[in-house]
Length: 318
Image (tube, rainbow, N blue to C red; front, side, top):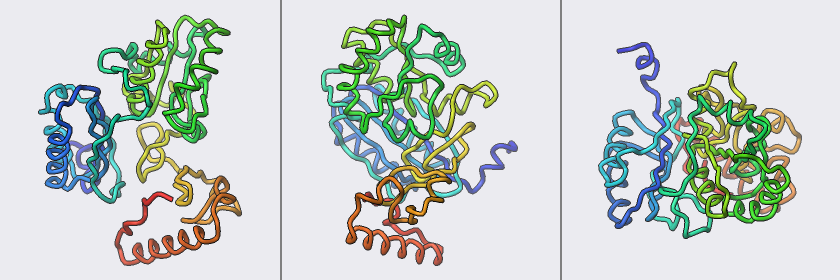
């Protein structure tokens, strides 16, 4: 056993995965994956659509490997893209395998990212690309994600959801292209999936030279040394880790249970932050009934924690 393997004993393996590849029978695939996850003690969320698969799962290493083997046995998924991390606590409460119209919702049904995505750029080559002044760098993530971390010089669309990206590009993004006349566009997101779809979208809009970060921010943080990095801040992740930094080490953000937004140490020090209830961002948008409900939920979470249990309402949406 290697030193690395020994250090991971007792920890939970996290696998973030996706692939654009046509699925004819989504219900059959959903059932296969639910069975594999349940058998392996794996939790998290997997989305199944006719355009492919997307999700993040966590569990014992053997269970994760069994689920990934099941996915790779599906036609078109042998080259599944997976990013791994380790955590001391299970970041999910249950396993959900859901059928969706899209594995990442953009609202552009005619796109085919499996065939039309932009040029992949490896993390080792990313710095040179985005440091070139003739490159326009665009963050395809949501506003709250860009607030806690970004690449130097990147344009932040400040969209509330990925579905808003097409409208942003057709107005502000197009205006930027007309003004700057860049030789190429470079786009990035958390794990790569939104980039594949957004680069396919830009190509459909007539933009020729479109690139994106292969494996997304997560792979960049895993492979690029901090001393060489152009990343600033933390990367938001959609599980109980909330954020990660270089080496995929867990960041210091927690989640506001009122609005589901990340909160850093300064935000938690605010007099308007109440654990489990609200933060500076949402304190004016919750009524007394909601505050009471959230406070009771937090009380139950604390009671469960003292008993060494996990309260199933911990991750319930507001």
